[in-house]
Length: 393
Image (tube, rainbow, N blue to C red; front, side, top):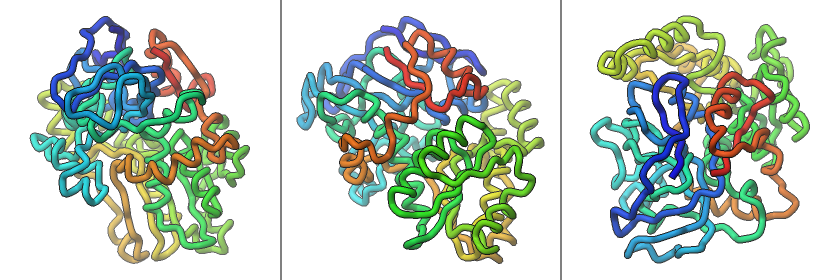
């Protein structure tokens, strides 16, 4: 089969690889019909190379049609249309019983002290072959796959794999009070959907980004916008819009790739040039994140407000402004999305023909799998208006 494989910094290739096979009775094989490039994939493309191996198959936002199931998989069958959550969870361990699926004790990667294994996402999370491929082996398929109805286009459902649950959790974790307000830093796919979900739930939303196409997309979905490229002091601008207080909550949908952190940019660049044996311990023990967005979030949120972090960070020793956080009484909530926890909330919205979350207005590029390297390049460089790229194997 064809699959997108990693070979080095900014070097991804579509190659022939062996077809996946059933290995465990809880496995399934799906024929991928749509898969997406995630902002988190750009961390693999740019920064997290020390935790990848040449030939690793990327991608964690797939959907498709079931081809084959293992003996213990009974809730799906060949021919079913399914979305595959990006985290791999068993459904029956203590964490899964608490609906904390991103911390599944069955698939935790204890070698690295990390949570549940993820599709297509480095040795840190199990080095499981990903979904930017023609076919995908799905571990823990007795629980994970989400059945969706036949008929509507894939675009209605594919975001259930990551974007929508991550965005719903980001808003839930933000603890916005009734009638309250939230500032969202970063209007990529997660920021866009977080903004729409917050609007759908009745909150005031201010979106911050510096890319014109992202700002325009948010604006047409009713979001107040601040252009960070033309706003010298974003936190002060938000306070001016909110009676001098700041918004009740802030969502950081940017993470480690934020602009405006020159020292961390140099650290990321140097780390990317080092041999893996040197770079890996440096990444896990040093400050290599660009924290500009998080610092602005801390400055923007009102006193005793909540910051919800959905953007991925990678360093273990990044400095935090603890004095300011303590003085303001800020609550932080963060973590990988517990995908299946939120599906009951989201399914009625994506099956609604009125498309209340605008899922049909997120993808800007639809490319064949063969053009995936081009998709990565334009998404990473923010070229050609790229906000969300879907791939068709």
